[in-house]
Length: 146
Image (cartoon, rainbow, N blue to C red; front, side, top):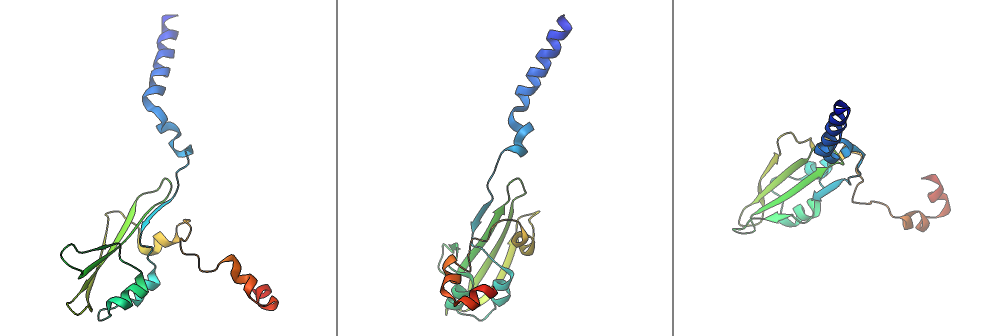
């Protein structure tokens, strides 16, 4: 009898000590994307010698700028899938006094996925290229062919 009480107490105590970690994978967690959504195509278009306007056209507005002036722009792409590992890539774009790109540097958190792997995740693309109105605005023959 005391052995059964001890066993039951041990089981209940171990359940309380483990908390929710046992069922952690069953709990829904949303995908978290933060910062600038960066694609390989945008990075390929980025080159030394471009103006600030060209960089904004390609990459969008920077997430951060240098505290000591407007000569360094930071584009941060951070992604954490539901129960996956955190990945972050930062692109630092350096400008001269005339607003021309002089250097482009890339850094990533240790253990982060590459940009291609981050974009291949099952996470939805935050930039919708075609709206529902797109097919409605096309003539009937064009809308059916897509």
